[in-house]
Image (cartoon, rainbow, N blue to C red; front, side, top):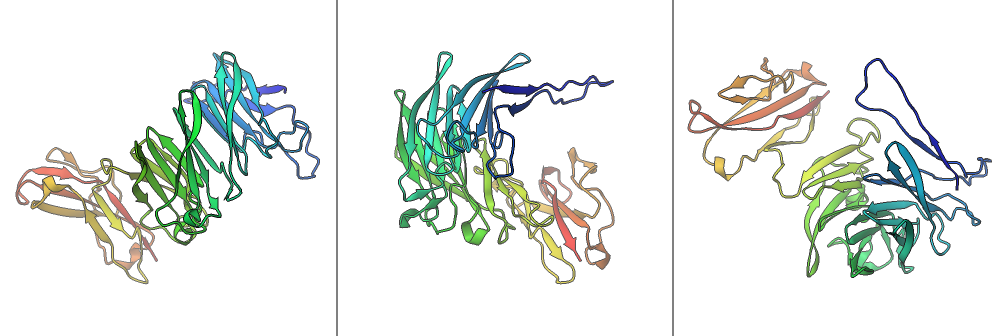
Length: 384
Protein backbone atom coordinates (compact mmCIF):
# COMPACT_ATOMS: atom_id res chain seq x y z
CA UNK A 1 0.00 0.00 0.00
CA UNK A 2 1.47 3.31 -1.06
CA UNK A 3 1.62 6.12 1.50
CA UNK A 4 0.74 9.47 -0.01
CA UNK A 5 1.60 12.44 2.19
CA UNK A 6 1.11 16.09 1.37
CA UNK A 7 3.45 18.36 3.33
CA UNK A 8 2.17 21.91 3.63
CA UNK A 9 4.62 24.66 4.60
CA UNK A 10 4.02 28.37 5.03
CA UNK A 11 6.35 31.27 5.80
CA UNK A 12 4.15 34.08 7.11
CA UNK A 13 5.49 37.42 8.23
CA UNK A 14 4.82 36.45 11.83
CA UNK A 15 4.66 32.87 13.07
CA UNK A 16 1.06 31.74 13.74
CA UNK A 17 -0.02 29.87 16.84
CA UNK A 18 -0.92 26.82 14.74
CA UNK A 19 0.02 25.24 11.43
CA UNK A 20 -1.11 22.49 9.10
CA UNK A 21 1.88 20.23 8.50
CA UNK A 22 0.66 16.87 7.17
CA UNK A 23 -2.24 15.63 5.09
CA UNK A 24 -2.63 11.92 4.43
CA UNK A 25 -4.21 10.10 1.52
CA UNK A 26 -4.49 6.41 0.71
CA UNK A 27 -2.94 6.39 -2.74
CA UNK A 28 -3.97 2.77 -3.38
CA UNK A 29 -7.61 3.82 -3.43
CA UNK A 30 -9.23 3.23 -6.86
CA UNK A 31 -10.86 6.21 -8.57
CA UNK A 32 -14.49 6.72 -7.72
CA UNK A 33 -16.68 5.42 -10.53
CA UNK A 34 -20.07 6.46 -9.17
CA UNK A 35 -21.03 2.88 -8.37
CA UNK A 36 -21.31 3.60 -4.65
CA UNK A 37 -18.24 1.58 -3.56
CA UNK A 38 -15.80 4.09 -2.03
CA UNK A 39 -13.02 3.96 0.55
CA UNK A 40 -13.52 5.56 3.96
CA UNK A 41 -9.90 6.43 4.71
CA UNK A 42 -9.80 8.82 7.66
CA UNK A 43 -13.45 8.53 8.66
CA UNK A 44 -12.25 7.42 12.11
CA UNK A 45 -8.89 8.21 13.70
CA UNK A 46 -7.13 7.76 17.03
CA UNK A 47 -3.97 9.35 18.36
CA UNK A 48 -1.53 8.65 21.18
CA UNK A 49 1.80 10.39 21.31
CA UNK A 50 3.55 10.01 17.97
CA UNK A 51 1.36 7.07 16.92
CA UNK A 52 -1.51 7.77 14.52
CA UNK A 53 -4.24 5.22 13.81
CA UNK A 54 -6.47 5.61 10.74
CA UNK A 55 -9.50 3.48 9.98
CA UNK A 56 -10.09 2.58 6.35
CA UNK A 57 -13.30 0.57 6.42
CA UNK A 58 -13.88 0.75 2.70
CA UNK A 59 -10.47 -0.51 1.61
CA UNK A 60 -10.45 -3.39 -0.87
CA UNK A 61 -7.83 -6.14 -0.75
CA UNK A 62 -9.47 -8.69 -2.99
CA UNK A 63 -12.85 -8.67 -1.24
CA UNK A 64 -15.08 -5.62 -1.60
CA UNK A 65 -14.94 -3.29 1.43
CA UNK A 66 -13.21 -5.70 3.79
CA UNK A 67 -11.36 -2.74 5.31
CA UNK A 68 -8.16 -2.29 7.29
CA UNK A 69 -6.53 -0.24 10.06
CA UNK A 70 -3.39 1.75 9.26
CA UNK A 71 -0.68 2.55 11.82
CA UNK A 72 1.56 5.60 11.30
CA UNK A 73 4.35 6.98 13.45
CA UNK A 74 5.77 10.49 13.44
CA UNK A 75 9.54 10.67 13.87
CA UNK A 76 10.71 14.26 13.98
CA UNK A 77 9.15 15.86 10.94
CA UNK A 78 8.73 12.59 9.02
CA UNK A 79 5.67 10.34 9.03
CA UNK A 80 6.05 6.62 8.42
CA UNK A 81 3.46 3.96 7.64
CA UNK A 82 4.39 1.19 10.08
CA UNK A 83 1.63 -1.34 9.46
CA UNK A 84 -1.58 -2.14 7.66
CA UNK A 85 -3.71 -4.31 9.95
CA UNK A 86 -6.23 -6.64 8.36
CA UNK A 87 -8.88 -8.73 10.04
CA UNK A 88 -7.83 -12.42 10.00
CA UNK A 89 -11.22 -13.39 8.60
CA UNK A 90 -13.57 -11.58 6.24
CA UNK A 91 -15.41 -9.04 8.32
CA UNK A 92 -16.99 -6.31 6.17
CA UNK A 93 -15.84 -2.76 6.86
CA UNK A 94 -13.15 -3.66 9.37
CA UNK A 95 -11.70 -0.37 10.61
CA UNK A 96 -15.07 1.32 11.07
CA UNK A 97 -13.96 1.99 14.68
CA UNK A 98 -10.43 2.23 16.10
CA UNK A 99 -8.75 2.84 19.44
CA UNK A 100 -5.16 2.84 20.67
CA UNK A 101 -3.36 2.68 24.00
CA UNK A 102 0.39 2.17 24.13
CA UNK A 103 1.34 -0.82 22.01
CA UNK A 104 -2.23 -2.07 21.63
CA UNK A 105 -4.54 -1.20 18.73
CA UNK A 106 -8.19 -2.17 18.56
CA UNK A 107 -10.19 -2.32 15.36
CA UNK A 108 -13.85 -3.14 14.89
CA UNK A 109 -16.13 -3.59 11.92
CA UNK A 110 -19.66 -2.23 11.60
CA UNK A 111 -21.38 -5.46 12.53
CA UNK A 112 -20.10 -8.10 14.96
CA UNK A 113 -16.33 -8.33 15.23
CA UNK A 114 -13.52 -6.86 17.29
CA UNK A 115 -9.81 -7.49 16.61
CA UNK A 116 -6.87 -6.72 18.92
CA UNK A 117 -3.31 -6.16 17.72
CA UNK A 118 -0.15 -5.68 19.78
CA UNK A 119 3.29 -4.53 18.80
CA UNK A 120 6.05 -7.16 18.97
CA UNK A 121 9.37 -5.46 18.24
CA UNK A 122 8.93 -3.71 14.91
CA UNK A 123 5.94 -5.83 13.90
CA UNK A 124 2.26 -5.57 14.73
CA UNK A 125 0.75 -8.95 15.56
CA UNK A 126 -2.88 -9.99 15.75
CA UNK A 127 -3.50 -11.15 19.33
CA UNK A 128 -7.12 -12.20 19.48
CA UNK A 129 -10.59 -11.40 18.21
CA UNK A 130 -14.11 -11.51 19.59
CA UNK A 131 -17.18 -12.22 17.53
CA UNK A 132 -20.61 -11.51 18.97
CA UNK A 133 -23.56 -13.92 18.84
CA UNK A 134 -26.53 -13.14 16.66
CA UNK A 135 -28.39 -11.63 19.63
CA UNK A 136 -26.12 -8.58 19.46
CA UNK A 137 -26.00 -6.16 16.55
CA UNK A 138 -23.70 -3.23 15.72
CA UNK A 139 -20.98 -4.68 17.94
CA UNK A 140 -18.12 -2.21 17.96
CA UNK A 141 -20.34 0.80 17.30
CA UNK A 142 -18.03 2.42 19.84
CA UNK A 143 -14.67 1.28 21.23
CA UNK A 144 -12.42 2.57 24.02
CA UNK A 145 -9.24 1.19 25.55
CA UNK A 146 -7.41 2.12 28.74
CA UNK A 147 -4.43 0.01 29.74
CA UNK A 148 -5.52 -3.59 30.17
CA UNK A 149 -9.23 -2.99 29.64
CA UNK A 150 -11.34 -2.50 26.51
CA UNK A 151 -14.98 -1.39 26.34
CA UNK A 152 -17.09 -2.17 23.29
CA UNK A 153 -20.53 -0.65 22.70
CA UNK A 154 -23.35 -2.70 21.20
CA UNK A 155 -26.39 -0.40 20.96
CA UNK A 156 -28.76 -3.05 19.57
CA UNK A 157 -29.55 -6.22 21.51
CA UNK A 158 -32.29 -8.78 20.88
CA UNK A 159 -32.16 -10.09 24.45
CA UNK A 160 -35.02 -8.87 26.72
CA UNK A 161 -32.72 -8.15 29.68
CA UNK A 162 -30.56 -5.87 27.55
CA UNK A 163 -33.00 -4.67 24.93
CA UNK A 164 -31.67 -1.12 25.06
CA UNK A 165 -28.11 -2.12 24.20
CA UNK A 166 -25.05 -3.30 26.10
CA UNK A 167 -21.38 -2.59 26.64
CA UNK A 168 -18.97 -5.52 26.88
CA UNK A 169 -15.63 -5.10 28.64
CA UNK A 170 -12.52 -7.18 28.05
CA UNK A 171 -9.56 -7.54 30.41
CA UNK A 172 -5.94 -8.47 29.76
CA UNK A 173 -4.44 -10.62 32.49
CA UNK A 174 -1.05 -12.25 32.03
CA UNK A 175 -0.98 -11.07 28.45
CA UNK A 176 -4.25 -12.83 27.59
CA UNK A 177 -7.43 -10.95 26.68
CA UNK A 178 -10.72 -12.42 27.93
CA UNK A 179 -14.30 -11.18 28.08
CA UNK A 180 -14.94 -9.60 31.46
CA UNK A 181 -18.43 -8.12 31.97
CA UNK A 182 -21.60 -7.23 30.10
CA UNK A 183 -23.09 -3.92 31.25
CA UNK A 184 -26.53 -2.47 30.57
CA UNK A 185 -28.76 0.19 32.06
CA UNK A 186 -30.70 -0.76 35.18
CA UNK A 187 -34.03 -0.37 33.36
CA UNK A 188 -33.26 -0.98 29.66
CA UNK A 189 -35.80 -0.02 27.02
CA UNK A 190 -35.64 -1.08 23.40
CA UNK A 191 -34.39 1.83 21.34
CA UNK A 192 -32.22 3.38 24.07
CA UNK A 193 -29.15 2.73 21.90
CA UNK A 194 -27.09 2.24 25.06
CA UNK A 195 -23.49 1.83 23.90
CA UNK A 196 -23.64 4.18 20.92
CA UNK A 197 -20.67 5.93 22.53
CA UNK A 198 -18.19 4.90 25.23
CA UNK A 199 -15.13 6.28 26.98
CA UNK A 200 -12.93 4.56 29.52
CA UNK A 201 -10.46 6.15 31.96
CA UNK A 202 -8.82 4.51 34.99
CA UNK A 203 -11.69 2.31 36.11
CA UNK A 204 -14.48 4.68 35.08
CA UNK A 205 -16.69 3.87 32.12
CA UNK A 206 -19.06 6.39 30.55
CA UNK A 207 -21.74 5.16 28.14
CA UNK A 208 -23.98 7.24 25.90
CA UNK A 209 -27.54 6.28 24.98
CA UNK A 210 -28.96 8.88 22.57
CA UNK A 211 -32.24 7.01 22.19
CA UNK A 212 -33.05 6.97 25.92
CA UNK A 213 -36.25 8.61 27.16
CA UNK A 214 -37.85 8.85 23.70
CA UNK A 215 -34.63 10.20 22.12
CA UNK A 216 -34.05 12.87 24.76
CA UNK A 217 -30.86 10.90 25.39
CA UNK A 218 -28.71 10.33 28.45
CA UNK A 219 -25.39 8.93 29.61
CA UNK A 220 -24.31 6.65 32.45
CA UNK A 221 -21.13 6.55 34.51
CA UNK A 222 -19.91 3.25 36.00
CA UNK A 223 -17.02 2.38 38.31
CA UNK A 224 -15.34 -1.01 38.55
CA UNK A 225 -14.10 -2.95 41.56
CA UNK A 226 -13.42 -6.61 42.35
CA UNK A 227 -17.15 -7.38 42.15
CA UNK A 228 -17.70 -5.78 38.76
CA UNK A 229 -19.14 -2.55 37.40
CA UNK A 230 -21.62 -0.44 39.36
CA UNK A 231 -23.58 2.58 38.21
CA UNK A 232 -22.50 5.80 39.95
CA UNK A 233 -24.45 8.39 37.97
CA UNK A 234 -27.10 8.85 35.31
CA UNK A 235 -26.37 12.08 33.46
CA UNK A 236 -28.86 14.05 31.38
CA UNK A 237 -28.94 17.77 30.49
CA UNK A 238 -31.58 19.65 32.47
CA UNK A 239 -33.26 21.24 29.45
CA UNK A 240 -33.08 18.32 27.00
CA UNK A 241 -35.96 17.76 24.60
CA UNK A 242 -37.24 15.03 22.34
CA UNK A 243 -34.78 14.51 19.52
CA UNK A 244 -31.77 16.06 21.29
CA UNK A 245 -30.09 12.62 21.38
CA UNK A 246 -27.85 13.43 24.31
CA UNK A 247 -25.12 10.81 24.47
CA UNK A 248 -24.42 10.80 20.74
CA UNK A 249 -20.83 10.91 21.90
CA UNK A 250 -19.18 11.02 25.31
CA UNK A 251 -15.73 11.75 26.72
CA UNK A 252 -14.35 11.75 30.25
CA UNK A 253 -11.18 12.44 32.18
CA UNK A 254 -12.53 10.52 35.16
CA UNK A 255 -14.62 13.18 36.91
CA UNK A 256 -15.65 15.57 34.14
CA UNK A 257 -17.96 14.01 31.53
CA UNK A 258 -18.75 15.67 28.21
CA UNK A 259 -22.02 14.65 26.58
CA UNK A 260 -22.67 15.50 22.96
CA UNK A 261 -26.22 16.09 21.78
CA UNK A 262 -26.19 16.22 18.00
CA UNK A 263 -29.92 16.87 17.72
CA UNK A 264 -30.16 19.81 20.15
CA UNK A 265 -32.23 22.57 18.53
CA UNK A 266 -31.72 25.36 21.09
CA UNK A 267 -29.56 27.39 18.70
CA UNK A 268 -31.17 26.15 15.48
CA UNK A 269 -32.20 22.90 13.83
CA UNK A 270 -29.69 20.19 14.73
CA UNK A 271 -27.07 22.75 15.74
CA UNK A 272 -26.21 20.43 18.59
CA UNK A 273 -24.62 21.08 21.95
CA UNK A 274 -22.17 19.67 24.48
CA UNK A 275 -22.95 19.55 28.20
CA UNK A 276 -20.28 19.06 30.86
CA UNK A 277 -21.00 17.22 34.11
CA UNK A 278 -18.90 16.66 37.20
CA UNK A 279 -19.64 13.20 38.58
CA UNK A 280 -18.23 14.06 42.02
CA UNK A 281 -19.66 17.58 42.01
CA UNK A 282 -16.29 19.16 42.81
CA UNK A 283 -16.26 21.27 39.65
CA UNK A 284 -19.97 22.08 39.58
CA UNK A 285 -21.35 25.59 39.38
CA UNK A 286 -22.79 26.84 42.67
CA UNK A 287 -25.57 28.79 40.93
CA UNK A 288 -27.91 27.08 38.47
CA UNK A 289 -31.18 28.11 36.89
CA UNK A 290 -34.02 26.38 35.05
CA UNK A 291 -35.22 26.75 32.38
CA UNK A 292 -32.38 28.23 30.37
CA UNK A 293 -34.82 30.22 28.20
CA UNK A 294 -38.08 32.02 29.02
CA UNK A 295 -40.69 33.35 26.59
CA UNK A 296 -41.95 36.85 27.44
CA UNK A 297 -45.16 36.29 25.46
CA UNK A 298 -46.03 32.99 27.14
CA UNK A 299 -44.67 34.00 30.52
CA UNK A 300 -42.66 31.82 32.81
CA UNK A 301 -40.55 31.58 35.93
CA UNK A 302 -36.81 31.22 36.27
CA UNK A 303 -35.89 29.03 39.24
CA UNK A 304 -32.47 29.75 40.71
CA UNK A 305 -30.75 27.01 42.70
CA UNK A 306 -28.03 28.09 45.10
CA UNK A 307 -25.51 25.42 46.07
CA UNK A 308 -22.94 27.20 48.21
CA UNK A 309 -22.30 24.18 50.44
CA UNK A 310 -23.01 23.39 54.07
CA UNK A 311 -20.17 25.67 55.18
CA UNK A 312 -22.29 28.65 54.04
CA UNK A 313 -25.56 27.54 55.66
CA UNK A 314 -27.55 30.06 57.73
CA UNK A 315 -25.69 33.01 56.29
CA UNK A 316 -26.94 36.07 54.40
CA UNK A 317 -27.23 35.80 50.61
CA UNK A 318 -27.60 38.64 48.13
CA UNK A 319 -28.61 37.81 44.54
CA UNK A 320 -27.86 40.43 41.89
CA UNK A 321 -28.65 40.65 38.18
CA UNK A 322 -27.40 42.30 35.00
CA UNK A 323 -28.73 42.76 31.48
CA UNK A 324 -25.33 43.61 30.03
CA UNK A 325 -22.83 40.80 30.54
CA UNK A 326 -20.67 39.01 33.08
CA UNK A 327 -17.41 40.85 32.49
CA UNK A 328 -15.82 43.15 33.47
CA UNK A 329 -17.37 43.00 36.89
CA UNK A 330 -16.79 45.24 39.89
CA UNK A 331 -14.09 44.40 42.41
CA UNK A 332 -15.65 44.54 45.85
CA UNK A 333 -14.11 43.50 49.15
CA UNK A 334 -11.46 41.43 47.44
CA UNK A 335 -13.87 39.57 45.11
CA UNK A 336 -14.70 40.22 41.48
CA UNK A 337 -18.46 39.91 41.03
CA UNK A 338 -19.16 38.36 37.58
CA UNK A 339 -21.78 40.96 36.57
CA UNK A 340 -21.56 44.26 34.69
CA UNK A 341 -23.43 46.87 36.77
CA UNK A 342 -26.38 48.38 34.89
CA UNK A 343 -30.04 49.25 35.26
CA UNK A 344 -31.96 46.04 35.64
CA UNK A 345 -35.64 46.20 34.63
CA UNK A 346 -36.83 42.55 34.56
CA UNK A 347 -40.43 43.45 33.67
CA UNK A 348 -39.69 45.49 30.53
CA UNK A 349 -41.08 43.70 27.50
CA UNK A 350 -38.51 45.35 25.27
CA UNK A 351 -35.95 42.93 26.68
CA UNK A 352 -36.94 40.16 24.21
CA UNK A 353 -33.90 38.49 22.70
CA UNK A 354 -31.55 39.63 25.45
CA UNK A 355 -30.00 37.59 28.22
CA UNK A 356 -30.26 38.03 31.96
CA UNK A 357 -27.17 37.36 34.03
CA UNK A 358 -27.32 36.49 37.73
CA UNK A 359 -24.80 35.82 40.46
CA UNK A 360 -24.84 35.80 44.24
CA UNK A 361 -22.52 36.51 47.16
CA UNK A 362 -22.49 35.10 50.70
CA UNK A 363 -21.87 37.37 53.68
CA UNK A 364 -20.18 36.35 56.91
CA UNK A 365 -22.84 37.98 59.09
CA UNK A 366 -25.47 40.32 57.66
CA UNK A 367 -25.16 42.61 54.65
CA UNK A 368 -22.49 44.68 56.39
CA UNK A 369 -20.19 41.76 57.09
CA UNK A 370 -17.28 40.48 54.97
CA UNK A 371 -17.96 38.21 52.01
CA UNK A 372 -17.26 34.47 52.15
CA UNK A 373 -18.15 33.31 48.64
CA UNK A 374 -19.00 34.57 45.14
CA UNK A 375 -20.85 32.28 42.74
CA UNK A 376 -20.48 31.71 39.04
CA UNK A 377 -22.50 33.81 36.62
CA UNK A 378 -25.74 32.32 35.24
CA UNK A 379 -27.37 33.43 32.00
CA UNK A 380 -31.02 33.08 30.95
CA UNK A 381 -32.29 34.03 27.51
CA UNK A 382 -35.54 36.00 27.10
CA UNK A 383 -37.42 34.97 23.95
CA UNK A 384 -40.21 37.09 22.41
